[in-house]
Length: 137
Image (tube, rainbow, N blue to C red; front, side, top):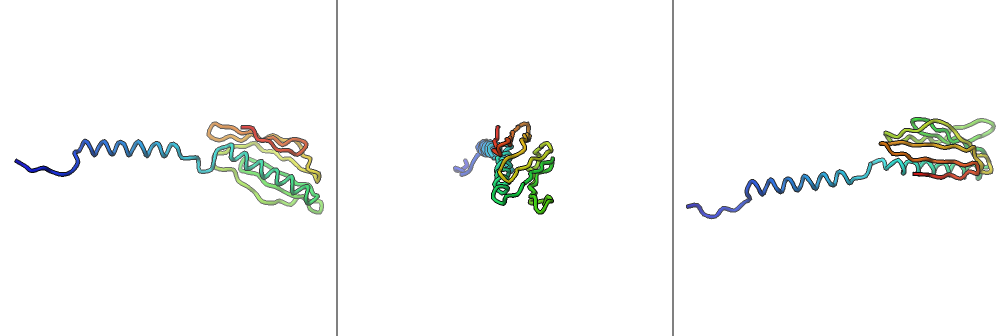
């Protein structure tokens, strides 16, 4: 007759492994997208568009916001020519149409609408003639 043995049975170990696997899958599914959602991308773009408008007013010089499929760039008008400023790239997987809008020295803009798409979700950024920028999710 054998004495009592300490330890776990194979079934108990398998149950623990299944529970750990389920917990890990819940954590992975709950993690946010590392680049943020398309709404966050639209909010970043809108914030930078507002900065371009404010820059045009403060410097009393027109500013242009040019958008393409890879990202967007803010340019300023200096001595009769457009000088490119900083360029911002879209987060991987973000799709956007091309185009441009300008802010004059009073903050008024050429109206423009930008639709961002990523992973089947869309966000719309509208730049109105009065220079206001709105995000619609």
